[in-house]
Amino acid sequence: MFLKSIRFRFIAWYAAILSVTFLLFSMILYYNFSGNLYARLDDLLETKAEGIFNSIDTYWETQKLEAMKSGADENVFSRINNINFAKIAERFVNEKLHDPELISMVVQILDSNGKIIVSSTNVVSIPDVSPEKLKYIVKEDGLFENFAVKLASAKSLQFRLLNAPVIENDKVAYVVQVASPLNSINTALRRLRFLLFLLLPITVLVTSIVAGEFLASVTLRPINDIIKTARQITAENMKLRITAPNSKDEIRHLADTFNNMLDKIERSFATQRHFMQDISHELRTPLTILKGELEVALKRDRSQDEYSSILRSNLEEINNINRIVENLLMLLRFDAGEATLKKEPVDIAVLLEGVVNDLRAMAVQKGLTVDFSYNGSEKVILEVDKEKLRRAFLNIIDNAIKYTPQKGNISVMLDNEKDYAKIVFKDTGMGIAKEDLPFIFDRFYRTDKSRSDSSFGLGLSIVKSIVESHRGFIEAESLTGEGTAFTMRLPISRD
Ligand code: ADP
Image (cartoon, rainbow, N blue to C red; front, side):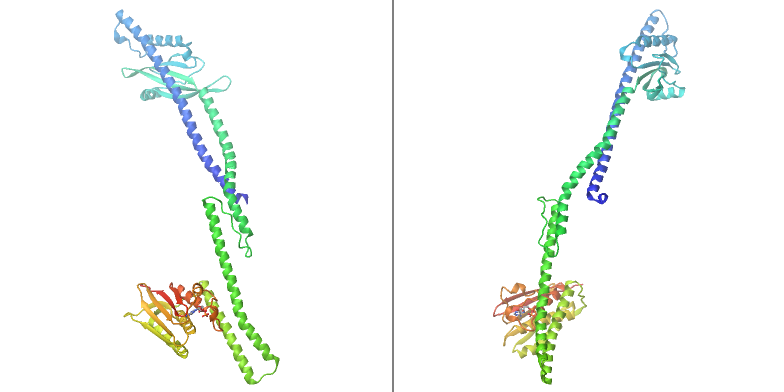
């Protein structure tokens, strides 16, 4: 569990990133430091070598001048394999043996063949220079190298060596070798290595655990709060909310999103509960009537006519129950997104006129006039589910007939707007009170005055679902005592 936790991943990532950074930093530091130490030592060796051949050359020049004064030929004074030069070099090195500046150094002079003329020590032996190596030294105009010397104590001592050639008439006259022990540099580097490589794991371990643990607890605490709250929330306990941290970070965002989701769920729960209450209530009325009628009927023997009348009444109630259930099923299918539309091209004017004609007899019976008008020149053909749309038109016109008193008029007008087919259903009926208007599309909503056996308050919510499933809109305007107008807009698909 711990290995899979965010806390562990935090620490692990922290440790990984820190290790890489630290390793890079240590490597750069180490190579820079050792490079610097070597460069300084190399500078020193170069200065010393320069000092040595300057001094030897000064000696040599003095000797040469004196000899020339006593008549010697200048051309005899080549330093290459010259016995006099070898003596001068030997004398110089022996004189310098106790010079404090060179005390920790090995100085060696080689002749033009790489053979030792003089060496400042007989303890430390610098590796011999082969003719190939001599060529290389000349080609490179000097060569730095490291060599190790085995001491009597079986320890080995490392040296840094500079081979510096001196050229005369494009030929090697002699080579100055200056070597210095590397022990101080090596000790410094060893210490640095120890510090870095000991410190690295300890620092990474301690920092990652402390910082990772700290970061994890700071960032995860609000998440733990969310988990704790979420665990306490049940269907009965929907009021609970997460206390969002007083920041503007992702956790705050998460808490807000979670709370918003809870709001939505709570609202949806309340709607569902309402809906269930409404359904039970609506079904209870016809069932109570049904039960009452049957109980009364069973109290004594009835005549054939009486039984027929009771059964007819029973059937009417069962039809009511059936209608409610049918309508509810249709609405639930729309809700669940399961209502499939069987779309086909439909001439809306023809469909509307058909519905108007079907209901005209009912309207006329109530002393109402119904008319349909469309003044456009082009046919309004929409891709719609014909049966569902017919149901929507029927519900609206049926309501208009229901809620319009005698001598009233109902007009249905079709209009062709740019992107929509607009249909207005207008009546001169009792109208809808201002306070009821926002709710008439809600399920089971009906105004008190309109309560009747055949009115369940589902008609308009079904209309709304049908229209919206066709990506259309519907709105209502009304004035009590004057009439109501429903405006429906259905999109015209251009493809
Ligand atoms: P019902 O089955 O009650 O007609 P609806 O959902 O169709 O249910 O309508 C909801 C309520 O809207 C009705 O109860 C009624 O009060 C009101 N209503 C609908 N259409 C009209 C109308 N044309 N004129 C007046 N009131 C209407």
